[in-house]
Amino acid sequence: MIEGPREGALAPFVHEGARVGEDTVLGPGVVIADGARIGRNCTIGAFVVVHPGTVIGDGVRIDDHAVLGKLPMKAAASAVTKLRELPPLEIGEGCLVGAHVIVYRGARIGARVMLADQATVREDVEIGELTIVGRGVTVENKVTIGPRCKIETEAYITALSSIGEGCFIAPEVTFTNDNFLGRTKERFKYHKGVTLERGARVGANATFLPGITVGADALVAAGAVVTRDVPARTIVMGAPAKPLREVPPEQLLDNQEP
View 1 (cartoon, rainbow, N blue to C red):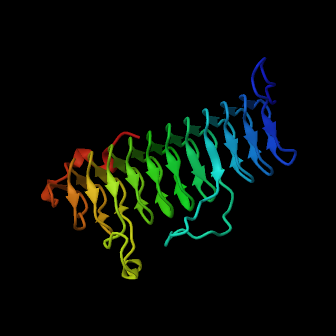
View 2 (view 1 turned 90 degrees about the vertical axis):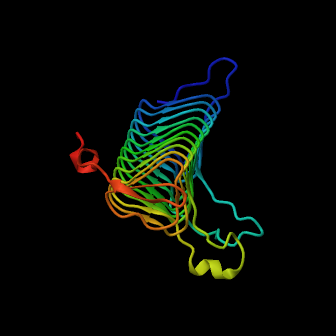
């Protein structure tokens, strides 16, 4: 059902071409645009905007002022963003979407993912099930994030990056993808994000140069500046980061409780 407006509140607007499932509750000022599909038993907070074609699964909670299915913008001087047709945003069942979250059209969010308050997820992003994207995290375009990852507060995941299953990224981590810092067209030959392989972990405030690969179950210490690939199951630290020792067996992803 759609909850009616309370006294003094703004009534939700649901386009006649949208569909809202049974027992879904809409807060005041909600806008559901043409072609949107909202599942059953969802709770949608005040002033949420669901853009055309967006698909939301059953049992999803969306908090106040979230914007779902937003189209990308192309600045006049942008050298990377291209305006094109994108598939609708898809949000899987049981997801939690925090207040002021923005998720762009063309993203796919797996089941039971949490997007905490003020997170931003760009187009051409895929996030696997049960992953947590923390408060204020920015995930740029053309990024793949595997299932059961944790990306904590204010981390920055640059475009063209890949994060494998079960990875952990602490607060304020920064990925980069441009060795030329926006100068010369030569940079497009080498434009590449960061790759974290399965089970890799990264401490707070670590910074990665473009094109770096962190091997499976490796650990990057807090504050490290990573300028070279990190071997699997290896702890690195420092600026520039250097190998310290192997990751203890009891810390490997395959040795954790399910």
